Image (tube, rainbow, N blue to C red):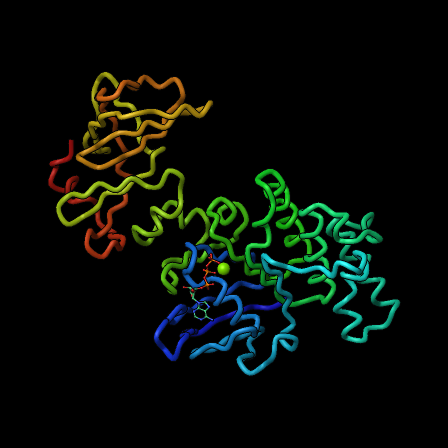
Length: 350
Ligand SMILES: Nc1ncnc2c1ncn2[C@@H]1O[C@H](COP(=O)(O)OP(=O)(O)OP(=O)(O)O)[C@@H](O)[C@H]1O
Ligand SMILES: [Mg+2]
């Protein structure tokens, strides 16, 4: 087990013409499950490949267990990597595939068998050892690829969207399995995904990456409730955080922070009220999403399915948000401000 750290790590391609990773500082906790989350092209795979030694950083340092490893080839880093396009050897059975890296490292037969049985047991594929890859489902193949990485008893796991070729249902169960397995073996894991549900559900912490830089790193709750900027605020959450411009600020709140104003009116000292003009609603069973316009901005409210909100287009409803749920961002930079919204301070709310 080991701590992985990057110090001001940068990667440029084409002689500096494209900078895809910019001064990234990340430090895991030992045994942590750290998720790198960000949109396509933001530099996640490049960062992971540098940690794994498949790509050389243009500048900056990579440390594993407190040792600088920049000069070490991948096999000397005690790391196991599983990529989206993991390839199993089609002519070998599952046992042969899992044992392959051990054979290559001249590990004796008995030890090979012990480790293959152990990894197959953890991943629940012990009954498949004699099958060929083509006789397996996508999820089973995925587990074979993980077992093959696991037998090397790595200090660190680097996983790059390993579940992306599974269908939604298998993905959910594979997510659960993978997390349980990581918890069991306690190996520091860096997991890349562009799927926020996967990130929120699996990560001890999430590093949100955009344009080659880390926008925020924190627990799923930190990132969701206290986003550092408007990119993070709108990248996580479905639908995303509502943002209403006022003066040189943006007031942000989650769709679920809207409440129906009671008949007696809203306490303006503890909350901010808004008039929402509804445009359409989406019924989701236990709840509904009301899409509307608020101060000229497209806005979404998540309400109980039976909430008394006008469904017809153009219907108006007064909603309020508790002050504690309001987040304020600088309109120009998008960065979070610590202050209360100016609208509350000046009392010009509702
Ligand atoms: N060898 C290369 N030469 C030039 N540009 C590259 C090279 N490898 C990657 N890039 C560019 O670097 C950027 C980041 O790529 P990277 O694969 O790290 O993104 P990603 O976050 O993993 O995206 P995705 O979610 O689509 O996998 C992209 O714009 C990509 O085109
Ligand atoms: Mg990628």
